Image (cartoon, rainbow, N blue to C red):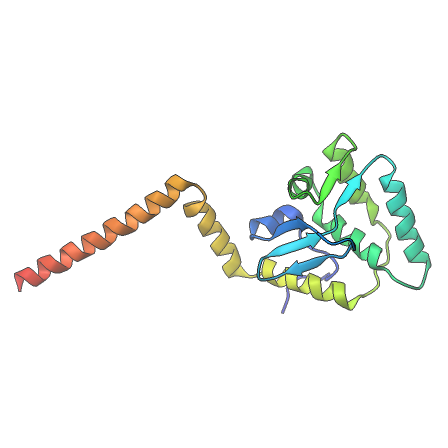
Length: 186
């Protein structure tokens, strides 16, 4: 079972990227979020942020909070709010081209998202709950963390990869030499 208490909240973008989950801008014309578990990619709609974007986003959230229908944009805002906590998280999403920041300051945009979903009521939505559970399942997998850490430690740069392969070859050749020495003795 999942350890997380809130299924509407995801870990931050930097925490997800540490376990190998990457971010891609959604390619189709509809603004839908999807998670591809096999590729470990979270597809998010591309958002271009200008000075008036915060007002538009808050109005859309307020409209959904007042109406009895939908709630999908509110879920998008809550998920983006959970992904962005610091400027490091924002830098990951900007590098992935999910967010284009025209505010001038990453800190300004991070503060905007951190204050966006205060006092927002979240309605349960099966599609978002399923996606969030899949992301949390991959995030909380201890084997995934170990694999990413191992890959970063030993295969992140070409010289490290060459060193690991050389070390394995030397170990195999030493083992073969030992076996032939023992066989020659008997």
